[in-house]
Length: 637
Image 1 (cartoon, rainbow, N blue to C red):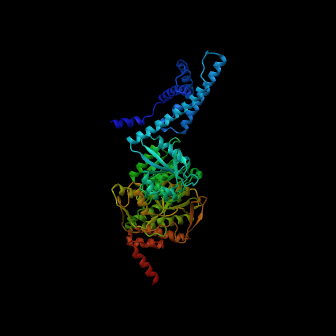
Image 2: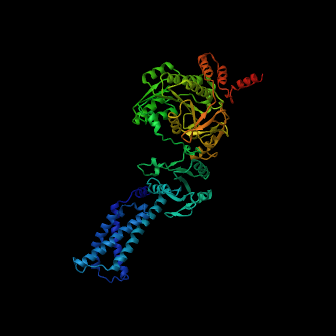
Image 3: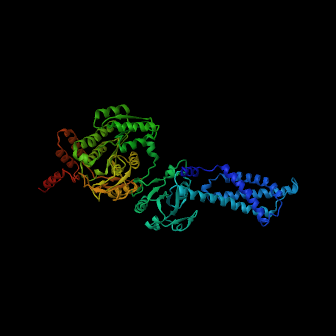
């Protein structure tokens, strides 16, 4: 109980009026000292004179301290600025006292009232010393007592610039935790080995396991807004190996009312470690193209569709039509948008395979723009269900695209995938066929502009490795990876959706937009980082199990198909894939033939027809590999 009492007492800030009262008391005490020093502690002076002078000393000191506000500072966080305020306050007091005595001597208001100049000067020096030292002594006492009563967290701040100083101040002001900044780290050689508020700045190379152990460092906080993600990844991997937590300071725009709070400093998450610079799009044309327009989104309750819907809802669209066959997720999105103050939308439970229902929607709402995100995307499941893959990814796309053409929609934007490039699985091949169908329509369209966006894996989307790894960590592991060398391109959901919206404003129609996703990332490395970021160790706490490639899965994803190259757009990170010419009439007929005969086709025959439309579709680790051997034998014969 005594321990808790001290902790509660320490966590309470002293009243500013108590601080002012103590300061005035110290001014009186130092005035006695000034007389004692002046007369060599002999007390050979009139005590009555000293006592008669005290009211003026107290009055002028009160005036000076209240003018400067030196008593308002938090004593436990005393710094050089607080010390300077005390100095200024005592200086004003000294000048005011000297001026008062000079005026009294001229006017003669109080006869025989005088304070020797030597006393004034000594009082100035003693009072300055006593008031400043008392503050630092209280601060040291607080730190000593709080350290003995409450566990302390030793941290290093990476970044000795302006952001680093703000982070340092935020940690010092935090009342809930007890942080001690043991040093700064900075890449700038001009700052290394210098000190800030008596705290040393270290070279990053000096932060070794021995340094961490010697100084009992628990956390390293990155406070460098312009730190490249590749450098952050390199440093995070290195520091995690040193068994410390790695945290980061949020962007300035996310600070609470422009001020950084200690509780906003969060652990580095996997989004920060994509090993590439995230794409940022701030194009006013995007806003102008959807403002006062009716916009329809299919697959609106999915990972991509829901984020597209959120971003569109923030614009001044005339009406937002949200379509999805998944009732519960669509309901959740509806509630979220309502709670965020958006009411200019309607959520409709509908299936893109049902053209009759879709046509009723198009006829009733007359959309101006369509973002088509509805699709089946799980590779292993679609490998077992080619019928469903064609029905959703091809027939569903055909239904929406045909209606877009029939109703003269301004822009149709399809969300595709990098798995459509040189596909090795049914899902990727079905998306490629959908791309080809859009390409065929674009050839004959005059009013509707058709656009395709193609990107890689999305962090945090339903079924992606990140949520899977999180669940596996919560259950104590192991984390499952299909192959130690498997790599993927990654992006965040907001990035993906920004790209889709941007694509809705670019080009003349018929383009496939891709973008520079940086380097592909090993899934095995992501798994290890997530274990470390969870405060655990690999393989001691959680192991990683290699399960083998799944049906249709390939080691490396691509963004361009054979025969494709790229041209630049006005955004340096967004490119246009220049696809090979296709016989649109022939391809369209083949696609329509598959759809018309779909109920009569077994899986093998269906996949065989898919391979005719997409010759580069070569099955991997799949039961359909035999079809490729049959095709090869036919060609040889």
